Amino acid sequence: MSYRSDRSDRSDEIDIDISSDTEVEKDDKWKTSDFFINDNNEKVFKCKYCSQKYSHKTSKTILKRHYINEHSMTSFFKTSAPKEPKTFRQCLSDFIISGNHAFNIVEEPEFVQMIRSLSSNIFIPSRFTIKRDIIQLYTDCKTKLIEIFKEMNCNIAITTDIWTSLSNDPYIAITAHFFRNENLCHVLLDFDLILHPHDGEQIKYTVQCVLENFGIINNIISLTTDNATNNVLGISLFKDYLKRELFIEREVFHLSYFGHVLNISVQEGCKALLEVL
Image (cartoon, rainbow, N blue to C red; front, side, top):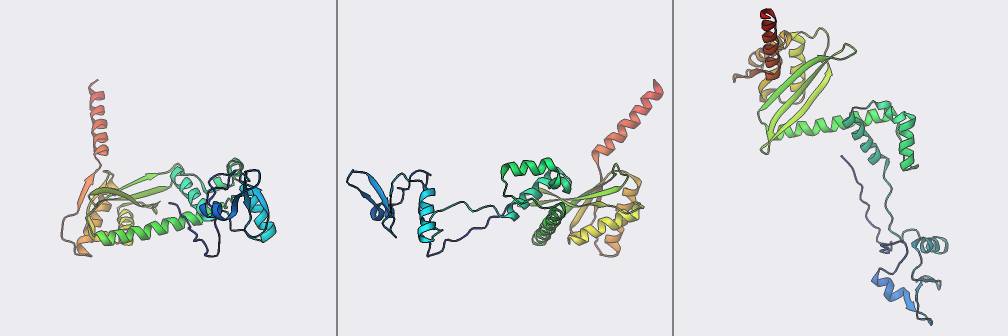
């Protein structure tokens, strides 16, 4: 995402439409009022506030200096508005999110040097600032997604998986799949540590909290997991919760990952072959 702040021109400002840096003869009103032919049959630019004359090929830098120094005017020339820090910070947040970079990349000397080579005026936020920006971005996206779910009120399929990181921490990811405007959409609802012990009861509680948080627990039609014992138990407990506590009578299907089932089948087949060989 990007943000752009459009600034309206003040009514008392005078703009000159200059499409090149070398010629100022581009605006009709300046041609009729400030350009004239001198005795040498040359076009001359005359300031409308004083008698100062310039060649029609005078650069806008010289003209701008004249208006600033002689008439204290700074709004004659249209210039590109500098990028606001928030715009650069948003791009930086997108870069960190899409590449799964650590927050402290913004403080690495090589990264800082690269940004400085593009522009020495860019303010590079600290890792704490960029962390706050990304958390705020997540909060804004979550709020928007909740509103979308409220407007659609459609059936939603859930997939979830648990794995252990290199630091031996268990993580759970919960993804929602639904149709919107006849398009199949996939949204990662949560990706977080799952508390020990990650047994069936803990899985059931985690899935329940996430779906209630997004307001879609009544819209679930299926949940897909692998065939791990804790997942099977967790989804079974969750389905019982829907019937006992929320009085949802319609069937909520528990599906197994085809890839996981196929993998188990192949492993069992290989074991049988090894016994024969």
